[in-house]
Amino acid sequence: MPTTKNAPRTLDAWLKELDGVRLPVDSTQQERVRRAMLDNRRSLRDIADLIQNSPTIALGLLRAANRSSNSLSEPSESLEVALNRLGLKRAESIVSQMPPLGNEPPPQALAQLQLISHHASQQASGLFASRLARLWQEIHWNSLLFLAPFWPLVYAYPHYFEQWERRVLGDGESARRVERELLGVSVIQLGLTVAQRWRLPEWIVQGYRLLGHDRRLLVQALHIAHDNEHPLHQQQMLDADPNLRRWLTQPANSILLANGLAISSHQNWSAPHTLRWQQLTGLYLQVPLGEVQQLIHQHAVSSARQHSVTGLWHPALALIWPWSDCRLRSKQPPKPAKTEPNVWKEQCTRLLATPSPFSNVLQLTECARLALEAGGMSRTLILLADRSQSRLMAQQAVGLVKEAAQLRLDPATSQVLKHLLSKPGQLRLTPANIAKFSALLPGSLKALFPSEHLLLRSIASNERVVMLIVADQGGLEISDNVFQAFGKTAQCIERALATFARKT
Image (cartoon, rainbow, N blue to C red):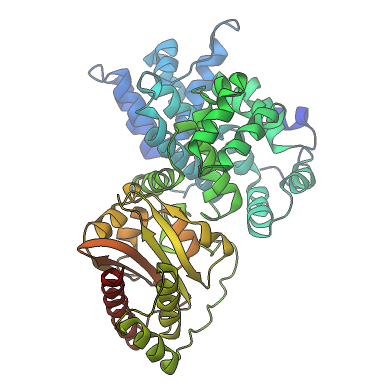
């Protein structure tokens, strides 16, 4: 393999280098694909479905088909088209000539990058293929192969991938500076050049061209996507710019969105880059951010079930982590929560007082917040439901970022919230059950409470749920004493609501 000393430093040199790299394939998968191609009972669809488990074989066949086709013809946009152009006899010969891995484990860096590609493909298929049914093959194969220009790079120079991952994702260094230092060229420019040279599908070329040269439309769309709390205003801004609206709705953008989601979540689900891709996806689909985040988490879990490999990292594993944690950074232990029994008793006495001492709901919820805090909850969010229970709005917050005060949740996007609003109830999240419920919670709520130990309780007034309390002990396991205090406080709040309702 090449060494760092003689690694290329220009686009032309890298192009020549990567053209000459022959990626290895799993020998078992290679033989399985060969036999399928020799079986005249198998359809092209069957064979393509089998090959998707080996992205290296898919890339080799797509490149071969596009090399052999007329330069004026369109590149094959899916593997079925490539197989049809090559013919199964020639395709089988190409697969036979690929270098097998034998009993060796797959190269770590290559396997990791291809796992990211699998994750991107799952996101693309889940988010976009059903909405663009006629283009599902293009969406699937283009999203899987979008990062293919870098597969030979990480195979030949795995230490570059490791350094980029650690320095850019882990330490937050400038990606452009790290890329120039390691490769001598921009990663985006390299991807575009390789994609054009290999005649990869136009959607892939278009994605790299957008990232490298046509960022104006992308920046405009991100600006509008950021205003996700006001969908009507977003639509008005798009209507005012027909060129941007036409660009945004292009199907080709689906593969860029899917890969943006897969790459950004590879490090941290709550990173700003991840949120921007989620917001842009919501704008593209015309779907609220909370619903988009829930779908993305579910598709990540599906991807992990299908493609996770021991020793490789999949972002779905981090869905059960506190959201502030990053895979490449050390975790900071949370501070223990404090309890103030005397203050807790005082606030609970106020809640239970008759007649109600509160002039308005704000005073009542403030007293409830103080009681929860004194009972040991270092992070608390109290949300009120509107009359139709179609919106939850933050009323009181403590121990959280300032954005928590403006939080708005749509219960329809979360099965957990819908259940808690249907009748008074309580959910206690622990490491034993968080994997089951995490994907069913709004992403914005999880971002506020990066914890594996969390309490959610809904409280009713006049037989209708009017309040939701979310609280934890700063990420620590909730002690029995604090858990009991939380339950008693919730009962006091329910009594206070009933007394206040009679007063008004």
